[in-house]
Image (cartoon, rainbow, N blue to C red; front, side, top):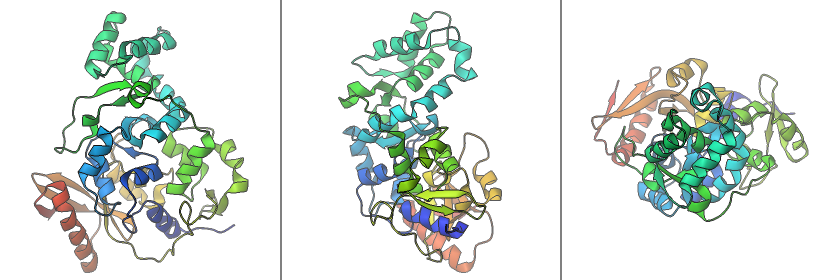
Length: 363
């Protein structure tokens, strides 16, 4: 069983994520390949696609949202993601135990404790049947249905336990640091089709196509699901197997030029890339050493609910960035050599017009 070095795993991941070379695939094809893109803040998935898709413009994604080809909803790890509508219908039911687990935490139970969960979920579904409502209106109506309980928390629990999608403007490209008010509708009403759960094995295959080779704990960290060891071990006969330097088993799809190409040369050069906050690359594995060191991870993820935007040099996180007052500000975590500094500056200059920024500065 071959042992893959951190650098070999790094190059494999960058290649699968379209970060070694921008792809000419369509935006739906790229989103489908990635399964979903985290989208708490509206602008971040657009930046992630800009770094992956040749010639990407914000309008390409905004049109897909308007057409409901792509939807925004709670998905992986109970957080807001963009996904192709067909994938959402298949994978939201598979991931529902993750969302139910979140809905059962003390944050929600302090308000909904004592209520019948099924009755609460059904009440929310009846309120939303055939219509779209702002979250605040759903909260108001639930508070009327359950006097003395905080409607906002009840609405949040309903949204986790029921497949709801957001209206397109919640994920539309716009000003930095702003969020549009969220309105929700039942997914089946919006998409005109029922949820059609895929087997867990299909979610694993799709994960490996975009993040492999990877281990059981990696799939679980990415999805939020637990107890996947038996599922993956039952698939061993169809998977390629490797080990990492610590001896942990890693799995990958059987060789296929499109879905699981041969692993790239660990010594292959890679370009500087700018990644948005919460990018898949940093959240797709339990062991993130293939793209970021432990020391840098603490700087990029200063709290449980934050993952800063980063830039890669030679395939690994080398610093963070932000946009303030029309300036793209770079914070390297260690000194850049002259050639690296030039490469970072070149990619930053390409990013400026996309961000609507005018200058690049350090610090």
